[in-house]
Image 1 (cartoon, rainbow, N blue to C red):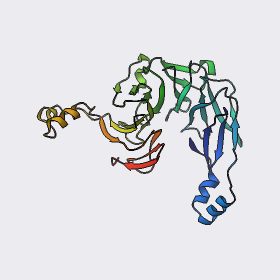
Image 2 (cartoon, rainbow, N blue to C red):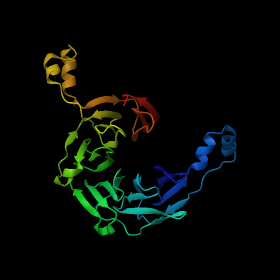
Image 3 (cartoon, helix red, strand yellow):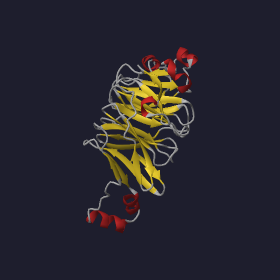
Image 4 (cartoon, rainbow, N blue to C red):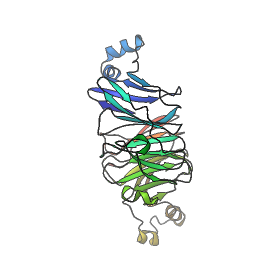
Length: 295
């Protein structure tokens, strides 16, 4: 995960040796804009060394997220169910050795609130989604919990920047939308079961509060819009004039706008932050960049 911290571009990465590394990418990004500098960089095998590393996790992990409201603040979660909070201190970082506890299995993803600087969400193999307030002591910081958010591992979550919604994707292949105002009820406001394999990535559109993407191990990336409703009149008359095609369309959720295929083992999908409607997806056989909508 990458974030701007002051005038530096910092990346946080997990490793198999249980360590989390922070990298200053400012120089590598600079040489990309200057061909001569790039040649020297490659010829001399220059590579940045970690700006900081933390070895306090007791297991390797996957979950990591930078705070969007407090530059340099970071949270990491490991396969041993623990979450640690990072804060910048002068020219380095301080990591609280006291773990945020509450999950009973591997922490799969972490997402900071886009509007509340001390609030984050996490999901886990224990099938739960938890909301934390980091102002509290680590053993008391879990404020809200949905225990059985999915029928299997909860793999990924995404926090809506415009609405009080949280998006989740699980090993059960379902994508769920949660209203944080009624989160404690344990009931999602919407559930979509189009994907036929575990969900690997979900992300809300940065400027449209009803649009999101999801990718799965079924080699599909799907685009959804919560604002779309089923057109009963069109279904009654037959939208395409082909009975077989109309029957197939009726089997699809009306909120499903687009299906992208052709990649193998899609791991992540992200909206481009500056180019409206552009999606970047990563998979075993490379990157795809495509645009399906104009917003």
